[in-house]
Structures are given as structure tokens and as C-alpha cells.
Amino acid sequence: MKEIDRGDVDISKLFNWGKKFRIDIPGRNKTMNVFVRLVGDADYNRATVYARRRSAELRKILKDENSDERIGFIPDITAFSKEVLVGTLLLFYTKEATLIAIREVKLDLPIEPKADSSLEELEKYQLELDEYPSKREQAIKDFVNKKIDEKKLELDGKDNEPLYKEYIRMAINQICEAEMFTRMREMCVYLGTYKDEDYTERMFKSFDEFDNLPENIKNQFITFYSAMEIDGDDLKKSPVAPR
Image (tube, rainbow, N blue to C red; front, side, top):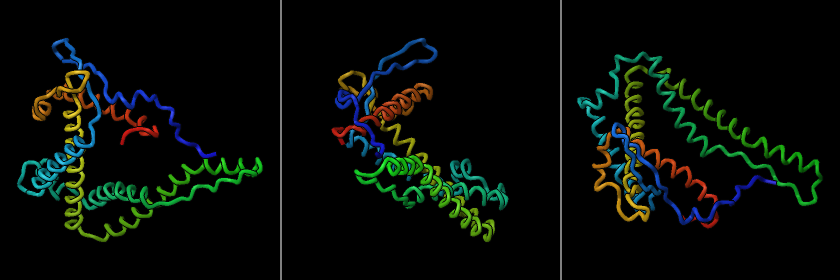
């Protein structure tokens, strides 16, 4: 039989989206309790909009060749040999190719035997099921390797200048993607952190207040929210989990 995710989730979790955490305040030998819960759809959308705007702002700055951010994040072309440029671009393309492979590589599941199948047929079916994950993983690897080999041939035929322009484009994309993810997470943490166990009074008066926390304290809040996200995976297994 196929392995099926079990719905043996503690139903009480569905009505208890939050947790109490204890914040350590370095240098003062003090702690404080905070209450963190995953944000709902409205706040999640708010965080998404905010993160996209911040990403767009950073992209605009990085495209300005004279900006401090551009100088700090994007090395000049003289810092690259062709070999390094090609190798760096292939790393970028590997990520893209992997995402495409996960979406496009199709591998049919083994056909489930009929109810009156023999034990030998059931054993064969089970073996095929057991081998399916590794076969799919190999199919994805083969797809990615083929795409990367094709891309390397293409890049090897180009001069440094077009390679460098492509590097700039992909580097900016990666930096902005990281910025969007970071800012989205931080906004979710701000919106999901409260002073009270009833989740009625937010811990911070504004996002700027949260954003300007000392890094070691700010990271504690982010870690707590991430722990809530991991716990939230259990809820997805429940057939009655809210959407």
C-alpha cells in the first residue's frame, strides 16, 4: 500500500496557534516573556507587499552604478576572469534549473496492484514504491546536469563583457530575493509578536521599533517565529486545519 501522511495531529493545536517564549536580554541578566503566533492571511499579504516594495527599492539602488550598495555588492569586471564568470553564472543557473526540474520532471507512480494480486506482485509493487523517491531524485539530477552542460557550452562561446552583464543581472536578482525574504520574515515577526497571551496587544508600537532592536535580541524573535512555522507544518496534515 502507498505510504500516506497520517492525520494524527493533536486537535487542540488548531485552536492554539501561539506560544510563549522567553527573551534573554544580554548584559542585563534579565528575561521577558513574549507571545508569538503565525500571522493570518491579511497580515501575511501585508508582509508580502512590504517585502516586495523593499526589494524593488534595493533593485533600483543596485542598478545605479555609482551607489554605495552597487559598489559594495557587485565587484568590478576587472575582478573576474572568464573562468570565474562562467563558473559563477553556472551556480546561478543551477538553482534555476533545479526549480524548473522539480516543476517539470514527471515520473509516473507505480500502478497499484489489484485486490486479488499475489504476494509476489505486492512485494514487487512495494519495492517500486520504495525506489520511487531515489528514481525521481536521479531524474531531477539528470535534467539539471543536461541543462547545465548546455548552458556551459553557450557561456564558453561568449566574451567577458556580455558574461559580466549577465552576472550583474543575476547577482542583483539574488540579492533582491534575499532582501525580500528577510523583510517578509521580519514583518511577519513584528505582526505576530504580542505582550499578552490573548494576542491583543502587539509587542512593538511600530515596525521601525522592532527593526532597530539590537541584532542579538532581534534574532531571538525571528528564531521563535521560525519555530512556530515548523510547528505549523503539523497543522497542514490535519483534514480540518484552517486555510
